[in-house]
Length: 225
Image 1 (cartoon, one colour):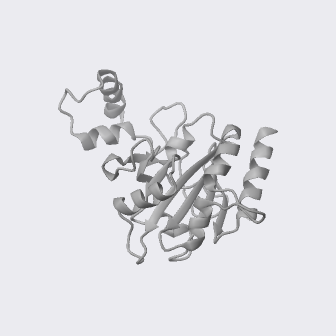
Image 2: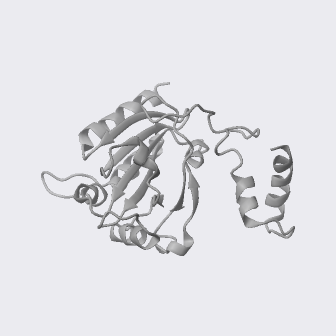
């Protein structure tokens, strides 16, 4: 760890891999605090033990993702590593909402697409636009295709393009969020306090009233702290 901590600033300052350091080692250096929470960063990821229940600190999961799918042209070749620690490191963040979806899930389409009319509902993007200034952050993930197979980069691109997504969206082909919910259940929504990385809510199924009622209550409480 000490050797990495010394080497990392040099590599960042250079901006290129002129030293011939392998790319996988460079990636490990840049994310050296992701799993351990040490290394002396300004906002280290909370140390374990980690759990999967409300009140537990969530493990620092990492994904292949787009930070802005539209800006990246929904191109699977432009997926980059994104970790929960990236949201923890955001000084303006207060609550992270992670959505776990599958292409076969009709309710998931309602979450992402929203609807209009008297009984309409805001889309996830609508909620983000309204609440982002209060510290609300959103990460969408896709874990299965229409046939219950692991989602691919092309599946993620299709989903992101269908809903013109501009917020962080990740491919969860390994179904890392499967440990938090029942098998083949979607949608699943997880709320995490970004200051402590403790789980605030785990919600299976499509219950927007419960979900965003909890979001509103948490953000109001955080604003009064």
